[in-house]
Image (cartoon, rainbow, N blue to C red):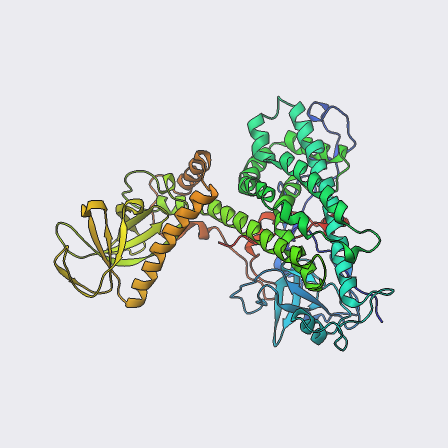
Length: 588
């Protein structure tokens, strides 16, 4: 029987294969001592990857695997090998939706046969009768590669442990499921210990040294760059102690760690603050890295702490990845836990609890990312009046064309409506250029009652309507009829109005809010994208920046989740980085 392949996935979403860092010659000399953290250092080996990326031509990219067939052993992310017939099975961690016919689409949980992994970033795989390229960071290699596909699928569906081929022994005296549970438990413990060291290195290697240099950093800058990572460090140390108490070193499969997650599910929500701040940290760090003395300083901090060769923005991404990895680990643990196991119910409850935590964090991060888009949308509108949309809203819930009938004229006007949380904005399309919108007004949804109107004559406005929705203010001081073209569109708008009220209430319950600094920054960014005198048009300007080069073999665009690490170089291997996890996509 072949050896069991048990691989830890890489922590960072891989960079596109055409991106490689170049070595800046200025780094090959000694560093000026005034910028070091109180000590002289040896020659620095490389510059920060974001400074001078070198873009190679598309001819350097791998070709279709059919023109370069896989051999018996492929190198996969440093120390993982494809064995036997040149393929392994992987599980999809999240959906990969694509319109490119050369990419392989799949859903989270699908089992993918990885046929070719000679490229570290994009693998070639097969799902049923479909095959194509997909991002390596979207999948996780299956724990038990020796298990036949049919047996594996049967096991996922809850096949009996005594079924043929399902429960073969993988270790001395341990059946398949118990051995797999031991493997997952060991991985959880190993990644937790490595993560604690990672947080310690950031706190002691970077933050401590930065605080000594008041001439270079203000407390506000440090808070923006590092967020509440020191708070995460204190919590994770306490959490690890709880795990260690429940960990059975002699018989890991008997460990009962589910209760540890349940006891700390509320405290895990501190990750929300860190994840929400992370985009601001990237912006602040990017500004500093344009100044050479900061590049040298951060590299000196890394070398002093003897940390692996990853840039600071890569280190700061880890907590975002970590909180999103817990549901994946618990789902795998539950898969290999017998219902009769004393830990089963706790693991099941812990999985649901951590899914809720991750869902809350993902939603908050998505909302924060949306504010830039909303600001850019507003900057595209002509004749804007009144306060900014962001002063009250942070999410576009629905939009579309409706006919508006209001007092006192009761005359129908064709308008484009945009439903945000708390407000409904309506605009008029330009007669010649339909991509240009003119601001015409807004309605305060906190003050409006939404009514479903039957087809026929409306009593308030004395007009005949069809597919109409009525918005009424307290005391019926304001009455607005909104008519859709089809009954289906009317129902969609009614559902959108319900969603808006539910979201407002949910934000109140969870305490979600956008800071004034974040709003101001979003509006400033939007103003920069529309210089004075430049014609405006609602063509979703934020998408115009996503230019991409077509290539006949590899996908022409990076998945959204990988853009953040686009300039990261291919680094030397480290077991540490294989033990942390991947970045879960924040759906938008």
